[in-house]
Image: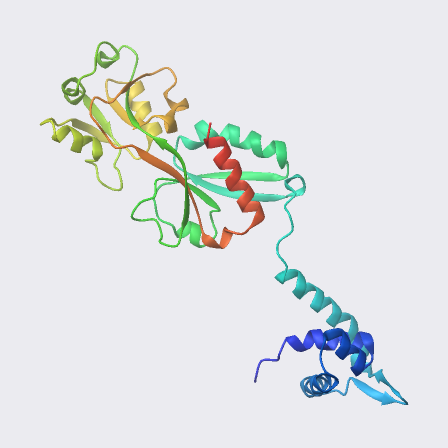
Length: 296
């Protein structure tokens, strides 16, 4: 069965409203003959004459009277769908957003983000979930609205990204640790025992590459999957944790931090979202809030 021409709904709406082929033609800026042909197509599609002659005018059939209210609403709904989204009013927005982040983001930016959003949009709720991998599947299927992290080889090619801030790696130890006193040289740093955090699945990352260029190698006593666990181990032992500085600010309270004695490339923390959310006014507003909070 051939699909009906939905453009005929607009024609039918105007015909039923005007009750005249001539007036409907003028309103739609068509010739009377074109409007007559459109009416013939409507009659064929509905199986009903719709408008029949009564004296010098036309009167609607019972079927036409039945359709009049429905068709008008359908046309209005269709026009609303195709109309650009209205300006967002965050004050009346009632919506929940799921944000997927690595540990450290919520501890450092979550409070400020919740306060920023609550001040402008009290009806918005944020649901933070832990980011355990770099796969983009949850953005694709809509389970997650927005992610933060480093854009890598596992990021889907269609995923939209925007940089939030640059970060650098630093060393962190407990107060009283040998590296909390004196100048930290590459040799002193490499001689310590370290807790490692695999980067993109590789236990030996950019820090080890920089040390190897100096003929040095560090001992990775243990590997963990998160910054918070690495810092917890360093806090309660003589292990050395090497973590992004800004991303772990609040996680390092009460610990001694120092600049790495080797040149290690920094990282860019970005936000990531699926392109279907690009034009959504509420999502665009959320992205602006995240950018604002992370810019300080």
